[in-house]
Image (tube, rainbow, N blue to C red):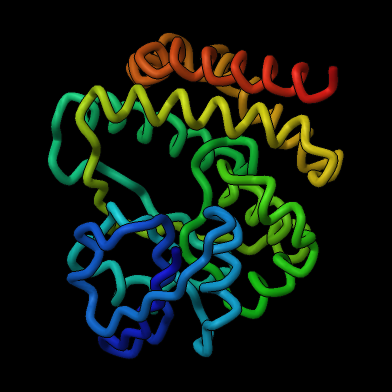
Length: 254
């Protein structure tokens, strides 16, 4: 499901695209319009961006809100793609672990932006985002349900390389531990299916694999940085999800 919020604060005019089913706390944004999509997050993202009539688009999940002052700051930043730091809103156990992870991958992205690093831009020049989405087939939109934001950035980076960074943040309402572990399993399952899907192009499959490899390569780049705690907590259910996806693929092909 996608929500579009056309908002004007100061001189900043943008559409906020909220993906994932459910209203969450993101409904505190004014004039949210919901549009149904039953085919997954990537198609919901595409649906929202295609409905944009403004020059920029800010992409949120339904469990995220804007830091005070972010919208005004985005008006001052030049770039086709703008990174926005993320932090936990509720600071529960998962949020504290994830904040360590977020800080680590953001540091990597500041050094050398790369779609394979799980820290990607949240704000785009809308026409550039539309041209990037035109490079993704409809079948892929349905097949890729995780890391769709990385695939979008992968295609944007082929068209434009001017990036910027915001100082203000996007705030996440992080889930309790049990829900976090279940989501990790689901992420692994979806990732495994996408990597093996004939609908996903070889270069997008390569990107998805690079994201997984990066979890290990980040250790070498950053050393034993505290964000590894988040990967260690989510690693077991994620790997189980990957294995379940492989087993289901074998059964379908047998």
